[in-house]
Image 1 (cartoon, rainbow, N blue to C red):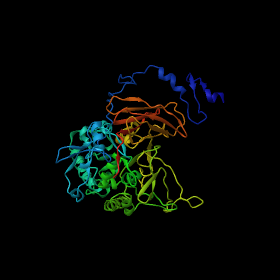
Image 2: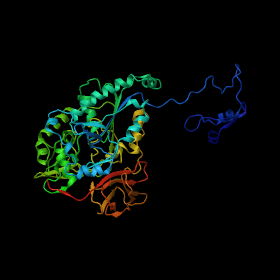
Image 3: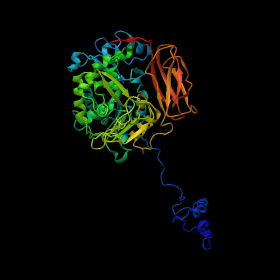
Image 4: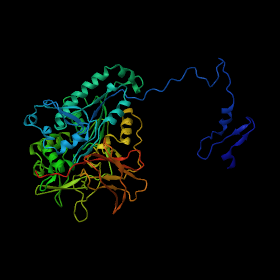
Length: 532
């Protein structure tokens, strides 16, 4: 056995001859002396270790495809063509406070009767959101600068990237038609670009460029409708893949909570403003949950248009939305990969009693035959699957493709977090997908969506029982205020008490040591009530 492990002398060669080892493979010790001997010239006078050619430089690992970036709801700047005013997306916190608290702050965003009838053009989308924004329930809406920059680094030329801004007030079906037209024009234009021909030379089979969609939130629903029910029947065949970031394929309970805000009790002024705006918006109705979420005791069912009217929505818009989702059900995205937020406290079901919604952080599941899962007493089984704080985990996965990439990020940050951006790069460049970093994957953060200046409020951290290794801080977006939020144990989670000095938009950051910190935006505004 000693000779098998160490090798035996071969008198004929004067070196150690290594027999087969325990795994039946020859050990490589015998080649080590040869590696140190000088190379011998061949008959042509060239050294054996010389190449008859020079090595080229590394080829660029950029895609030849045309990429369309599709933002989520409230992710595009909007302006009024009649007044020339920007009505959503100005780059300062003062505008944000005015929009949510001034008497006419959001009135221009309400859909008019003409717009409901399809006569559009009063409001236009100018570009993707470039500064942070905020909304009740939806909370922080992060800009898309980092996402567009990441996509641009992975393409052959900036002209290969189309940031698709759209009027998110309108229905998914309406915007999907615009998206299909814009994507087709973008692909044809890119295929004529000189950089496209050059990029094909360093790609497998030198194939022609196709479309890739990178879609956040509601943008994924637009993409699904554009590719499977849009006016261009060949668009899906010309699409290599779709990457969705927190898309609510089956809707979100948060949308029902928005429509129900203030039913039965006065609410903070911004919440009432959002409710009146949302009532007119087909786009918001398209985000209502379509999965079984209405808790009626021993029965769990889907919301009907009548239920939606009872909780504060528009019944006609609810019927239109139901038609859309019925059409999309069973349709698959080509080359789909879904990035989903996990571990964040997320609304997943609701009760509806006398017009008042009570939302809960648990959901229900059905067997493959459609029967509700029940315990031994017959009661529906409840599950807390978490999510990104807005969209629960199971809704962010396509019903036809349950494989997902889980990221411990809030909904808005799914289009901005480092781990998400790395996944975008990998998807575009067709590298092997190794998955995101897993450190801190069970940590979640919970903050109020609206606070009052000078009044203490609480940040809660779930999934850990010790503040060791965690850093929490609060800073004003574009302002001078910044400070730590000191975490302490509070029952089964950690908490920090925070007070901000003045009205404005503030970012809470929780650094877990993971490459991607958890972040969420909070609006501080005077405590004024909306009594309807």
